[in-house]
Figure 1 (cartoon, rainbow, N blue to C red):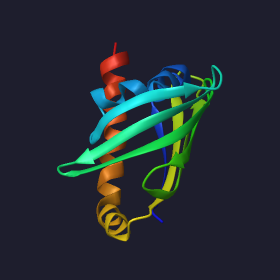
Figure 2 (figure 1 turned 45 degrees about the vertical axis):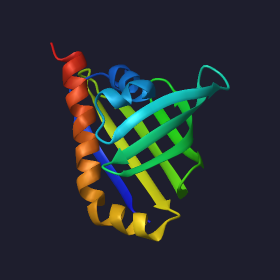
Figure 3 (figure 1 turned 90 degrees about the vertical axis):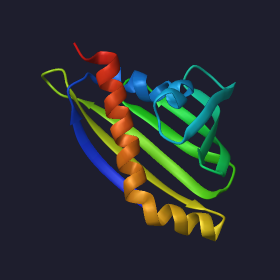
Figure 4 (figure 1 turned 30 degrees about the vertical axis):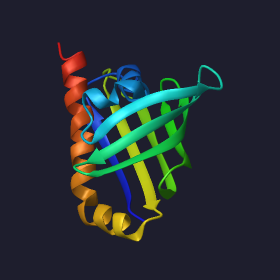
Length: 145
């Protein structure tokens, strides 16, 4: 099962990065391979379900996740249904005294399809780098002064 954990200091507030990460319906605007994302059901202001379609060339997969928000410090994502055996990730945002924040990101997943799992595993580090880079670039676009 590919797993990745990373901590990064960002020159933006925890509130700003929380807002960016929790706005899942905007992901197709900046996240590579994200073809669509739609909130399908809200349990409350802090818990919702979203369908995400990820694709690359002819390969396309849809999955549903439960997203739990604890503003401004945590976004937790739990797998509900789709092509995976397992998916979980979290984003923690730790405020720093000077107004920046540390981002603690963890993801682990496993596809049901062995061929897709092997393909993702081979490119896992590159995919994660591009994804994190896309969030950083979006933060610059939204919050750079």
